[in-house]
Every structure is written in structure tokens, then in C-alpha cells.
Length: 67
Image (cartoon, rainbow, N blue to C red):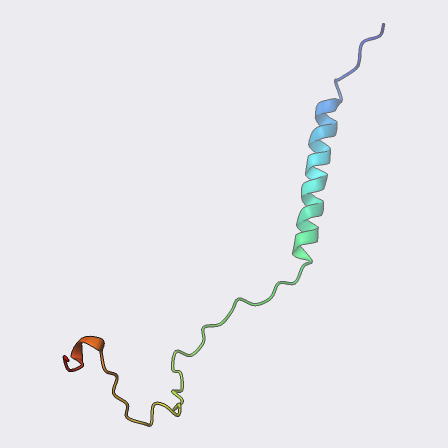
């Protein structure tokens, strides 16, 4: 039974890894990525809601008169 010749395996594996690396680098470099998000302004406009313009008083249960 003849022996399996493994002398060229190292060169084959290394060359295929290098080729795959180059192909992946070319594939990634051709991609266009979106710009990173820009910071938004922290100044927010406060809108008046209808219940903010009226004065209301909330009674807590322990502040009610005792009966």
C-alpha cells in the first residue's frame, strides 16, 4: 500500500489561508459603512401641557382632617 505524500500540504494550507485573507480584506474594504451617529443637541424645547397651566393641589391621605 503506497504512502500518502504530505510534503506539499503545508504550502497548500498556508497559500490558501493567505488567499482567503486577501479576499476577505478586499471584500471588507469595498464595503461602505454609515457615518457614526452625531451627538444631538441637549437643549430640548419644553412644551406646555394643559395641566401645567392650572394650579392643582394634591392632598395626601395623612394630611386630610381626622374624623
